[in-house]
Image 1 (cartoon, rainbow, N blue to C red):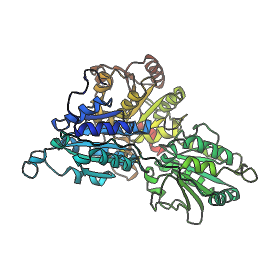
Image 2 (image 1 turned 180 degrees about the horizontal axis):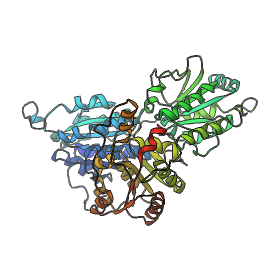
Image 3 (image 1 turned 45 degrees about the horizontal axis):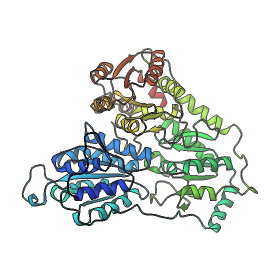
Length: 549
């Protein structure tokens, strides 16, 4: 029970039935900025032990809820006020849809007695939400627990995503009557028949250069451990999407790196795929990939797709689909000992591929400031498996994914479906709330920091010992790079930035400005060790991005 909240004194209301159902699903966190139309929702959640976190902007609150699911596998709640509250939150809700994150959006609404006449802050919330959620309806107060259970079932069905309930203020305050709290659905794992598994095993045994591609779906439940056993048993090299980094340690000899956004690096990745005679796709969702992956391999290439459910896309050929419980299917497809489990790729092939990518993303020697690649290399060298890192959107994120070596699954959190700026700091706040004893480091560009710096106040209010690293080059470097490649002059990409270290001190954090890699490395080590909220304002030279991307 949150501090200052007494035992339940209100009659059992619909809001209580909602909160009790959320608790039954393991929900622990709610985020938002309340209006008077959602006060019963906030009260009921807190009385059920669901902590309400007051954010500073609605998109940031949605990003926090998204991150909780990524970290725990349990949905979190976004509570928004009517009108501007829900409209402000839409980028974060759309992000959850494209990041495959289960989230429950509980939106306040005017009382039913005012509907159709009163028009202040009034528009159709359900119509607004419907394009970017898996389920959107107005609450039926007579079946609130049952309807929420249905919404949660939909939210958690693969691919996971947000669901939306519109809560008229008077319906939320109605007596709940004898509504029964519904439990999560219980489903037996779906696996391959023995014949189907044997057929796919035989196909894999015939491949001489098989290659695995792992995506976000392969991080769910116990799939990472099963995936690692699978590739080791077959001695199969693997590539990952950005969000699947660390599914097996990035330093693993079979790891060939990450795919998805850098045209220069992906040219090497697609060459490697062109050498393969069989692809195994494990939870490999194309929502993380740019358009170069359209028709990335021919229909004639043997492909085995292993996933929780059909994604029904035609981005690239999927071959034979094995759908169901991914870890169990991976176990079913382990070599039987008579065939397979032999090295087939040329001994130095994967090492040579990694070397070519490392040459692309190597640190350059800037005339002034810090090489972004050197910054990420220094951070990667200090990171331990206990660290949680978040990275925002821009050129720095693409580079970070090819330089930072993740040691465990999901160690580098990011928005790589919608790719929404402003994600890193809210995600880091959520990570530090969920894991208060682990080091959390957020990395972001100056444009993203300007967008989301209000959340620094939340980090200080909660005494979160997170470290924020701002790569400061006073521009939107990725857009400037694209302008350059289009032979355009730089327009609308350069801007003035404040002294972020001074801004951080204004929020009560420790603020440090660094201008060389040695200063950054020392500041990072001290900040992580201090267990004190710290912002490092790193002056970087963005010129190396032009060769890396």
